Image (tube, rainbow over all chains, first blue to last red; front, top):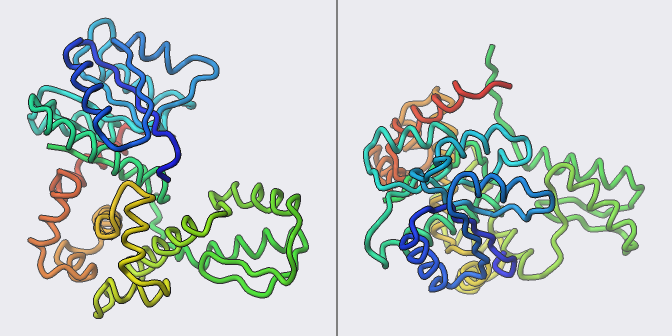
Length: 149
Length: 185
């Protein structure tokens, strides 16, 4: 419920986008803790730490150097410890085939990166609140796929 | 080969509760939707053992009044949406209020305060979840699914499905099929 801290992890290589996201989260009325990593390799290192607190929701940029989002997603889904993580893929593309590819590969949420700050806040709010319903209401996570426009 | 099953969560959970309570030799008066009434108070050690036994099935003991009320509201809504017959013909807010035995206004405020969402959103989410299961089971047409979930038309169901998930029912079905094709068990 609301008193539990919402752990959010962002994997994003662009500094401006990281700042944008951080600002947006801080303006939402949720009790959250945000951790940021800069690329796919840092992401996997973070998740593979021995006593890491796994996030309730991971926002994963598709285009990152060193290891991109799709590769990281595959590794996450193939890892016994990480496979049930909620993952929101984050991309500049709005093409139907890219949306379907990301979701078919195991992402739970697909987000088309907005350039408008208020739009970003709305998108994060929707991702966070729908994901929370799956976390608290015993819904079937296998069918949890959401495309946020 | 593939086997489709459907479940009645109420019957299943009630059986689990009964089994766990009887395993610990705890005398009870009744077991009903989300509630066990014991004949006498149980020790905190028994409570812990019971909780541990139930946790294996994804069942948790709730300990605050407000959380219990939220859970009851959710249970009533889920039961309403998953029943075999169509949704009740009286106003949903009255249905919920009567079943939970609190005013709808109070429940609504409480729900929004404690969860990240409203009762209306929760209802829509549950209906669409059920629609997903029916779509994937593939033995009802979209028209029959719309009727079963009390939508006024297929267009209305599709519109709400798209609004809630961002995908059309057919895109959803195709994505899940591709996902399942990738999994190896």
